[in-house]
Image 1: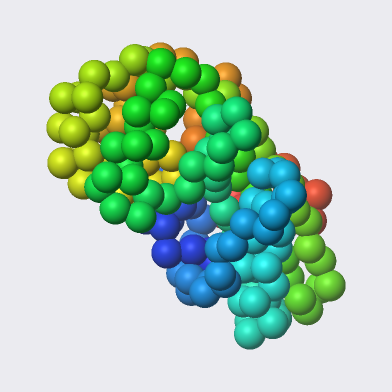
Image 2: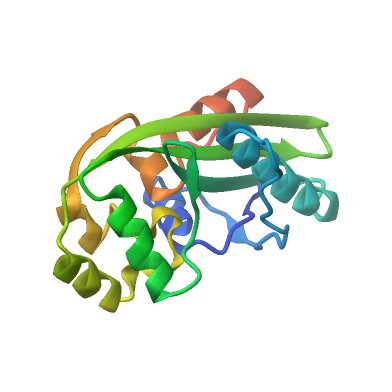
Length: 191
């Protein structure tokens, strides 16, 4: 069975490698544009479907795994920061508060006319942070390519007070959700 990860994310690649899945990486270049009035759950589900579908059309015999993650605080979506100042702004916004991490995951195989999309949700509480701590963290470079401007699996872990829900969802790919999707599709990832 052939798998494709439709993502350039090193974290998603590490998660799939950690469970022993053999896969190729072909990032899907779907524009990540939030549509006005679109709920965060709908947004990440749509993007993961679009990413999977784009590659499934090119590789119809392969099982394509696609995902998209966003962070929500109140009614504000926090995606990847555009620069260091934006990362500082995001971290100041979520410091000392609970936010929600949504990841849409799609498993698709065109040849089998199969597609399943699900959304995982986790609540993350971040410790209060001083401006000095925020600036120090941003200077490490770690927050610059992550939704919400932090890495729960990296240096940013020391700022996380609690997680309710899937840890791997917060990293960027909810493995338990993906495993359930594979079982439903009759795909055996255990080799």
